[in-house]
Every structure is written in C-alpha cells, then in structure tokens.
Image 1 (cartoon, rainbow, N blue to C red):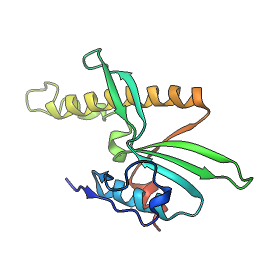
Image 2: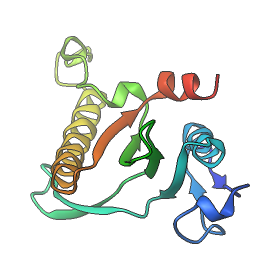
Image 3: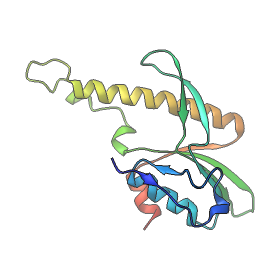
Image 4: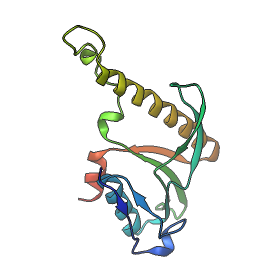
Length: 153
C-alpha cells in the first residue's frame, strides 16, 4: 500500500491539523495536491467529515470517514461544498456476475464474494453520504483513477 503524510503548501486552506494529513493511496496524494494548489478551492479537509451508516454486512451502525471535503468558489462567487470519495474504479461498480463461479468446482469464488461484500458496504456508505449532503445542500461525488489523472493533467 502506498501511504504517507501530505504536507500542504497552502496551510491556511486546510481545515484541520495540517501536520496530520495522511494519504492512503497515490490517488489520494494526487487529489490532496490538487486541492492544495487549485486557486478556486478555498478550503479542504481530509477525513474531517464522519457519517454514520448501517453496514449490510453486519446490520450495525458504523462510521464513514469521507476522504475529502472541499469548498469551491463558483464563477458567480458563491461557495459550493463537495464531499469526495476516492476509490479504484473497479470498486465503484458491482462485481462482474460472469466471474461469480470462477472456481473449478463451480462454487461461488471467494474473490467474487469479497468484491461483492466490498461493493455493498461501499454502496451503503455512499447512500448515507448522498442523504447527508442532500440535507445540507452539498454534493457528493466519487473520484476514480481516470478523474484524478484528468485533474493532474
């Protein structure tokens, strides 16, 4: 796993303790750099918003630490708040059901079960985030590899 501490260049833009910004992937690091340097992003934070959700895996309430919150200055001067989840694109879609029985015995593969579980838990988090944002008048988006590549192009 690719992880480390991000040190912002524009410390005043960061909401939270700028000495404790941890990225857990190269994509998160690139997204942090983009937020830090983009002139229209007036503030940003990493894992500063926590949303409760019910996991379909165990039916218990868990806490979802959203990857990013950004406040973006719009062309009319207003500020838009966006919560952002950074995920590999393959985790943003349900697993391919044609790979369900990818074992010699024809049983459901462990890999498929793991991918399906990951997806349904993530989907529960995202639905909770969408409802949370709707109440606040914010937006919720997911950034995959292609989106982050485009940001840093």
